[in-house]
Amino acid sequence: MFYFPNAPNGYLFSSDSCEDIYKNNIQSPNGVYTIYNRNNQPYQVYCEFHKAYGYTFVATNTSVAVNMDDLHTSSDHVLVRFLRNNHAQTQTKVEQLSSFKSRYHLSLQYSKNDGYATPLNANLGPYLYLGFLPASEASHTGGTQGYRANGVDFTFTNCDGNTNSYLAFVFNTNNRPHNDYYHKNDGFNTPLMHQIVDTSTPATYNIPEYFYSYFELHMGGCGGYGVPEQFVNTRGAALGMRFDVTCEEPAPVSNTTHTGGGTSFGSVIHYTCNSGTLLSGNLERRCVETGQYTGLPPVCGNLDPCASNPCANGGSCYGLENTYVCECSSNFQGVRCEISF
Image 1: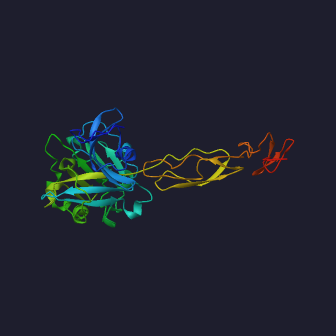
Image 2: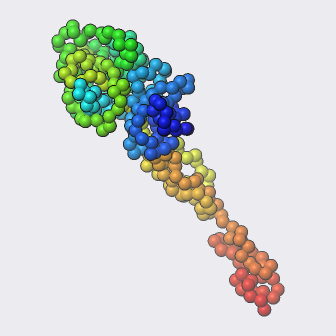
Image 3: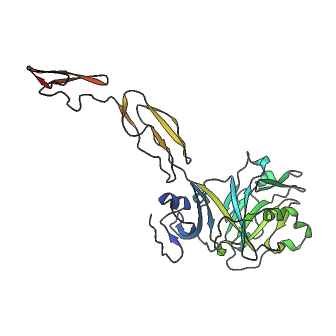
């Protein structure tokens, strides 16, 4: 990877993710970076770094293919940032409803919504899609649905089996007219549409305003339909996807038994030599912030006590377990044949 601090459009790395940037240099600053998709096409992201994890935000001027799997390692929660009319920024930690958490992860898609309801403004260009319940689940009339925001479940009862259960971030860089669906029924502007914003707290870090876009929150079936026009003090939203530093688990080591291990930051693997002693390497290794395991694989075996030629004056060395015996030539004696007589 290469780092150019004076790049005109932000920090430039030959990388495909914020996670790679962090692993390359754990002192990397928060900021706008140019990364590359799987077709080697550049686009911009904002990387927010914390200790061994962080969040990725995609710039709204993105026009190339984006593989979302490159941008996050967890779909347990996301950060949704809101841009207020006074330019303040707030954020909400958004999760799946508690009742569905064990069955469905959040769905994170780029310009598609496979298995989920389609945004009404999908035709306005690229969009980031945050899906809560797949259509197969959201279609249940009478079901309790919704989202979890900052640790609180906000729910509604789906009155007609309509499958909407999503929050879409629509880039619309050409400023085309938005769908006017929200005008058609005052009942769309429900408390559920506002609670995701009302529970937000001041953002940990501010991101450039061009990362914020038009958004639509759509639930049900009587859950509501929310867009910026319905909010007194909210201009746009941005999606922060979580990544965690991971390590490739070390390959099995011959002549050892190990416990522990794993790919997550802080994982520890302990080795025990099956026979002999540790000749080199480390019996304990740990996954650290750089995405590497510390130390080196252990090498276990029987250490030759005669390897250092301890017997002097032509004496012969015979190795025993953890020690040796010297057979001295004529006229020499002592443990190491060091005494002349």
